[in-house]
Length: 323
Image (cartoon, rainbow, N blue to C red; front, side, top):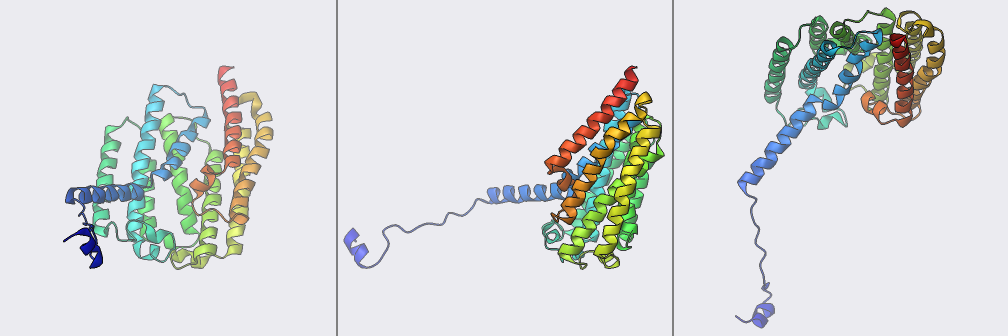
């Protein structure tokens, strides 16, 4: 049949042929998606909490020799493994509730991309790695790590459903990170510093609860039924005041800064207040705070303020240690 005849009868000159995707390529893509979901479950972005909080015990004036550095780094590693394991267990427990949340329903377990049984195997593997890292690492007290795991297992089971208790438990997790830092560095313990960390974390968590309450309702988190905006605003205000006051009291009484114990609090006060006010502005005015870590890390003014505050404290520590 000629080309003219083909065209006359309406038969296309070239028939497109659908080329099937190779099974190997499909398998590679599926494996890549599974790995991506497993990484998402581990929440590596949240490891920032461990990297930033555990070394804070260095502010106690601990001696930073090679052993202290090794123990601190190892403490960060085991806490990253522990927190990832806790996130996976919590996502397993919350998979039905997460499906009622506009964003959390896309999480790997809630969306069904990772089955609950597969996630349990993953959590077991992380637990095994955690135990191996804890026993293979340098000698130091690990009771804060053990307390963190036990507390968060209780949180995943039922404490997260108790209003106010849920905020306190999450804050306690940060306090245990600081205590693990003290255990790693051997620095002098400061009660005022621990209070500053606990109450500062309460500001972040209360801001997150407020954002959840005002944007997604209470269906995905039963504990939110015990809150309202007015209560969370009070929690934010009280926690913010205590965080700034306890931090300044730490600088005045416990920080190893010698003769600078009068000058440094005066310099740090406006920076600490600005940081708290800026975060409150993000939560109350800009309606952010769903993820405190991302809120903090994406705000250039907050980062600059934290760097200035950290530089002031670090300079005072260096001046005192060299005098």
